[in-house]
Amino acid sequence: MNHLIVYAHPNPNSFNHAILETVQSELANQGHEVRVRDLYQLKFNPVLSGEDFAAFQQHKLPPDIEEEQRHIAWAEHIVVIYPIWWAGMPAILKGYIDRVFSYGFAYKYGEQGNIEQLLKGKAALLVSTHGNSEENYRQSGMYEAMKKTSDYGIFEFVGMKVLAHSFPASVTTVDDAARKSMLSEARQLLKELHA
Image (cartoon, rainbow, N blue to C red):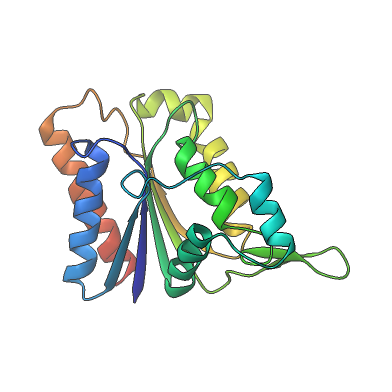
């Protein structure tokens, strides 16, 4: 299968990068085609501009959006790896979605005002690390809130099936053994999803 990894963390020494490497190698070991879009490395422009809207209205896409949409169109599965900052995605990833999941590509409104999901048939897996404890996020309802805004509000809205949303917790304070266990869990999750 064709897997696109959309990755959003600026530090190449981060635990997120270790997750990226783990996911990439596991998918390759399973025989899948894998492409990685490292948004910080690409210096992706996350700002949805007036010029973008003008281009959309003229049915012309800015080259960077057109390229990312080609990758999305190619992929059957999309893996999104990012840290949770201030209860949400990093701005660069939110901006990627704002610009790339554009009207007419990811969704549109039908004649009756109904939403037409244009990315049906694709699946998504999200991995969102955070420094807070699992207990704190669970008790506060944060996991459900983030699933609602990202899983349902973005990916399912455009027709993708969300296979799983993993939330590795306390990544800034746990020891290396715990982090290795989290990486093993990521590998196992990919094996189960493709069993």
